[in-house]
Length: 441
Image 1 (cartoon, rainbow, N blue to C red):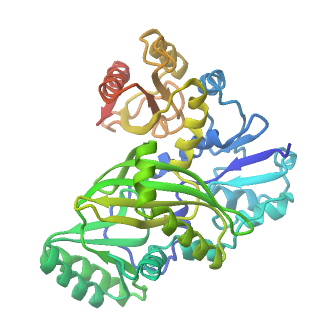
Image 2: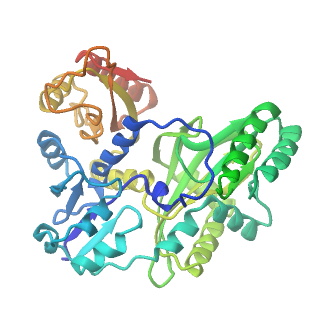
């Protein structure tokens, strides 16, 4: 069996985005950026027993041993060079010598095709076929998904705008009709790159901010749409094979809040049947055909939603890459062997001092929180590097007055019903805060 190197970055959109594009107002969060760099550890479910996961930062040995004990066996490599650039593939390609550790693999499985992916494949002679970078950039733009929706369905809620003036005119029209307007960066991601405006004054401030950038030579491209009254969000994961055939992977119900992703769980049979009757899968297969004709093949996650008036919006955004939904599907494939499925989620946390992860896992087990507990349920921690992304080495205390270090704990909650899920999360919170940390709900 071919041995695969699983690697990638979770902030692909920032590497697809043209630096000459105007930006929406935003405050840079360097600690958040470091957490995103550590998220590559979440790709372990994509590894078979003979595959290897490459991560930027070390994973806790106790965490890897725990994952192996519950059915997630994989090998692990940690980047050893100088501090890598934000794009790990760039650092891999730039190394003057070939790293013998990477020669052992037959293929590279990237989370997304980003700059330097092709160079790494060529450097190590991997037998991996991936689409061209310019194609990947184009089909991941919200401009493209807006065009595709109109092309397939005859209309789209979103409209592209290419100047501050267009933004102002169309925005005021939508404000008058709907009372609010949503502006999307073409490469915005969960919780970043979207702005909800509810007044002419706020719209004009944003338009003025864009005009200033246009005066500096920047190019404008945004999608603008009314803020829709959403009943539920969901997504579909599928693969477009090299010959253009469509392979359905799964459906995920998604929990979002203020445009930020909070969690997902596999959709049940009743939900799938409802979507099938509504013609949802027919639209997706047509979308897959268009993507293939545009030159793309590989993993796709399409975000969709159902409005409170019963309107189905089959294409909200196209993510031509792997996604959290793909990860949760792979987690559930393993959990299914035990008759279980999980709710994939995370919590942002803060702490002054890094603590012993192995000791914490033992404590969670003693308190019947760690999966699998005596009922065969519990919480499955998915990350350790993201948890401590804002900390230094073990035992390092942040400077006086420096506030709390930021981290993020990804996990899957396995429970028989919602109240049980909430009880596990509350007990997890108490356990974490007993270490002197802060658990943000």
